[in-house]
Amino acid sequence: GAVVSQHPSWVICKSGTSVKIECRSLDFQATTMFWYRQFPKQSLMLMATSNEGSKATYEQGVEKDKFLINHASLTLSTLTVTSAHPEDSSFYICSARQGMGQPQHFGDGTRLSIL
Amino acid sequence: AQSVTQPDIHITVSEGASLELRCNYSYGATPYLFWYVQSPGQGLQLLLKYFSGDTLVQGIKGFEAEFKRSQSSFNLRKPSVHWSDAAEYFCAVGAYFGNEKLTFGTGTRLTIIP
Image (cartoon, rainbow over all chains, first blue to last red; front, side, top):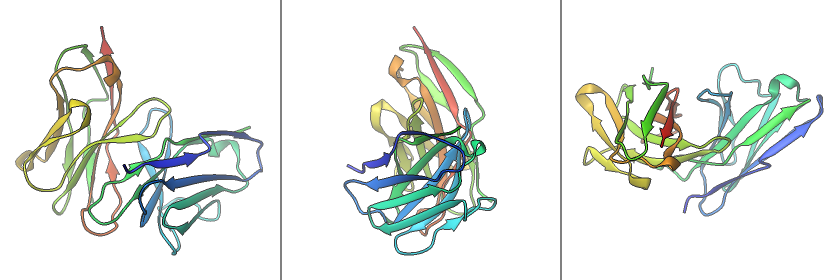
């Protein structure tokens, strides 16, 4: 149980394009989803927290106009990297939590490479 | 502010030997503690969690962790490691109630030698 699916697992695109990453909770309803960014050999950096049906809460220093988060249903959240540039290349990981007192369950991550 | 310290960046252990990964936390209330494991290029898998009850927590893959409030520690242990245990291990602290974010440690990379 508690499976989180993230898609795509790897994407390469040209600078200036927008990329959408999906995060789905497959066997539970996620009241809260989280988006992280991880640099090589480093820990996870929380980018934003999203609750179903409301606006995401972004961490300090994260550009909300660049990293658009939508949590339209209890099983799906999307992260769109708009006008991506090489410095946006990274490993992006989502997690989902069923509710209070429940742990976060993580997707397998998306490796984004911007050329 | 809450924080997690994993003092060991990299640990090398022989296959079959015992393992202990250290984690110290700083948290203003009762902590909700986690250990996650990450294989290269993958997401994180939950090994175990602790909020209350027995301070020795059993997890998956033969791992256990002990919560010691007096030492603000939540060390992860395994009596006999397998080559498949080689990975990055993250300790994290958060809140049981509310929507507070998790704070992760910097991780400990575990290498297993034959």
